[in-house]
Structure formats: C-alpha cells, structure tokens
Image (cartoon, rainbow, N blue to C red; front, side, top):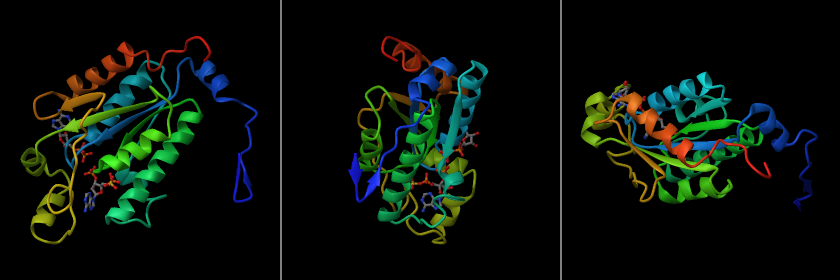
Length: 204
Ligand SMILES: Nc1ncnc2c1ncn2[C@@H]1O[C@H](COP(=O)(O)OS(=O)(=O)O)[C@@H](OP(=O)(O)O)[C@H]1O
Ligand SMILES: Nc1ncnc2c1ncn2[C@@H]1O[C@H](COP(=O)(O)OP(=O)(O)O)[C@@H](O)[C@H]1O
C-alpha cells in the first residue's frame, strides 16, 4: 500500500510468530466509562490477572497517555477525537506486537469508539462498558475533579457539562456500583474465555 509517498514495510518478525511465541493472540480490551467509574482500577486488576496467567498485557490509560504522546491535547470535541484516535493507533501497534492491550479511556462518543473498533479485526476489539451512575462517580471523586467541575474550575467535564454516550451494545458491561472489582474482572475474563479471544487456533 502506498499513500502520500509513504510505503508500508512488512516486518521480518510477523505478528503470527509473536503470537505463537506468546502462546496467545493479541487483542484490545477497550474500557469506556465516566471519570471515576473504575476504568483504571479494573484495567490494572485485569492486567495483573492476565499477567499472572502468563499473558503479555499492557495498560493504555487515558490520563497516562495525556502526560506524553497526547500532552498537546485538551478536552474539546476535536481534541477528544484525536486523543481516542491516537490511543487506538498505539493499541494497534501493541496488538501487532502480539499483546493484549487494555485501554482505559473515557472515549465518550459512540463515533469515537466505532472509529477505534474499525482499526481492528473481528473479535479483536472487546468493548467493555464500565457502568456506574454519575452520582456514585461524583461521590467517589478520586481526584477531586467533579468538585472542581461543579465549582466551575473545569469547563467541559464529562457527565457535568460535556456529553457521555453509553455504549448500546458493549461486549461486556461491568457495573462497579454493585459488583466488586474482582467480579468485574471475572466478567471480562469469562467473556475472553467463552469467545476464545486469546486462544491460538487454525490459521493463527
Ligand atoms: N474535562 C474533562 N473531562 C473528562 N476528564 C478530564 C477532564 N479534564 C481532565 N480530565 C482527566 O482526564 C482523564 C480523561 O482522559 P481521557 O483521555 O480518557 O478522555 S477522553 O477519552 O479524551 O474523553 C480523566 O481520567 P479518568 O478520571 O480516569 O477518566 C481525568 O483525570
Ligand atoms: N467495583 C469497583 N470497581 C472499580 N472501582 C471501584 C469499585 N468500587 C469502588 N471503586 C473505586 O472507585 C474509584 C474508581 O477510580 P478510577 O479507577 O480511577 O476510575 P476511572 O479510571 O474510571 O476514572 C477507585 O477509587 C476505586 O477504588
């Protein structure tokens, strides 16, 4: 493929070879939800659980990426689009390296999550809705951001004065106000197992 005088180079070590060595397929587990819903908490517990099972995982956390590759982006609609696009592109590189990527990004709009999904093959993008009512998120307020938003010190805060569109058909829903962290992680692990998402099979 060639666009704008840029040529895609095949790599000498294929994704297939990397997956065979890892003993599992790569994929992205995409956690979406309000600030304070539990994305980072669930992502890290899931990463640990998979790591302990010998799975190569990496967490891409929105907050962390905004400290580096996305540090020039704010929270306008356009910047969030670009933020999600970059997270998805970075996730794609990790998946190409045979890894299980756990992305924890608000990704508030359906079109952003659809855009991310389109970068991956079927069964390679697992959308997880980290569902928690806004009032519970506000009570948790682990970083004090809701308080700042209510005081008008942050403008355009998701759920307060910026939109969040809940996914209509996520592969998994984790309800962190009624399920423990362990139950949430188990639900995701169960999905991966039931759908053989990480399992190597014919042709891979
Ligand atoms: N205005 C506004 N709205 C929402 N969140 C805000 C905002 N300003 C700063 N923060 C902090 O940024 C984190 C969200 O970054 P994301 O990259 O996940 O957001 S997005 O997907 O581009 O919407 C978010 O992290 P989480 O609380 O983990 O979701 C906040 O710590
Ligand atoms: N069942 C649960 N799942 C995930 N987080 C929970 C749960 N119950 C309570 N919490 C707490 O809620 C907060 C969620 O914060 P965080 O993971 O940073 O959310 P987010 O990344 O979505 O902003 C943490 O303090 C976490 O300990």
